[in-house]
Amino acid sequence: MSQLKPISSHMDGGAPSTPGKFKVDKSPFVHHRLRWHSSLAKLAFWSFVFLGLILLFFYRSPSSPPSSASDRRLLRHSSHPSAPWGGPSWEKRVRSSARVRSGRLTVLVTGAAGFIGSHVSLALRHRGDGVLGLDNFNDYYDPSLKRARQALLERARVFIVEGDVNDAALLTKLFDVVPFTHVMHLAAQAGVRYAMKNPASYIHSNVAGLVSLFEACKSANPQPAVVWASSSSVYGLNSKVPFSESDRTDRPASLYAATKKAGEEIAHTYNHIYGLSITGLRFFTVYGPWGRPDMAYFFFTKDILRGKGIPIFETPDHGTVARDFTYIDDVVKGCLASLDTAGKSTGSGGKKRGPAPLRVFNLGNTSPLPVAKLVGILERLLKVKANRMMVKMPRNGDVPFTHANISLAAKELGYKPTTDLATGLKKFVKWYLSYYDSGKRSSG
Picture (cartoon, rainbow, N blue to C red):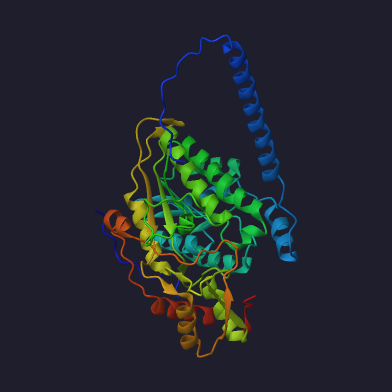
């Protein structure tokens, strides 16, 4: 078993049916039945073709009509072409960033300007691994926060290529320039509720983007091992707790969850056909410095300081909503351990040469707490009383609770979270007050 080394924060702050025997029908109606079955098969075939065209149209279309100006901005921004890439100087920066110092891995980190991606990139660089980032800097939330993370990475000599994971030519070029040993795929469209406003973005990033990445990886020589971000959301409407990797995941409560579940099935396919070594990580409510503004702990902090009301959801039976809050440094340890223990891919030139590892792990804190408890801790840290509003939980894809069973990750990765919510929020609040100090930056 691989044991984790402590990592200090680098960013302060359908059940199958049973087959039976087939008996040939020798009755006078056999030819009629065969013609009927043939017609049915053709009908089914063209139905699938038609469905495929509909999905293609849905995928190509920018979105359903946006409900706000911010949605329209996001769609326009997302359709912009990527920043220019290629040429000798660009290739030199790519190679320099990916060069191994004292480590042993060469890692492509997608979503490197994101919350988890930036932390993982810095942790890899600080231990000497070669790191190259990829990010499209979309404006799902304030891009200036992503640019600030980019600046931190640049100071650590980590270059982020600006481009989209769906850009097959760009991915091919990156793998031509650098023989990556591993890929940490964290680029995704996040957020449960936003899927009701812009569903197409989730298909584009979480499904098409994942396929695009796997296509590049299976064609690379050598093939890299892939670790990618699934989500605790795949457990959906499960009522059994804690959630274990072997539990059912066929009842998603949101489109976001459905795309992550689809990703796990797609991963199985590429592992089975092409021999890609793939590890999926089901993250549980990750929080901490440099976090995402759309997460509750982040916008609760902003709204408490502004004197705005804090909506606290309760279940239809007036129960509490709880989350397995997991601090970013603990998640980073799990990510690095997943990279370190990932077995090699076995394909070459897009052809499988033997079985390759296919794994999935929960990365949580295994100590769920009510959201009201989180608000209470923020009140003490900010020294401001929150204006609490108890609200019935809307039908927007949220689930009443999450709770991770991490025994498999503990056994296979040496994963052991050590940060309680009070300690983690203290570090987050310190960062938040520093980052948005004296109105130098707007918190939205």
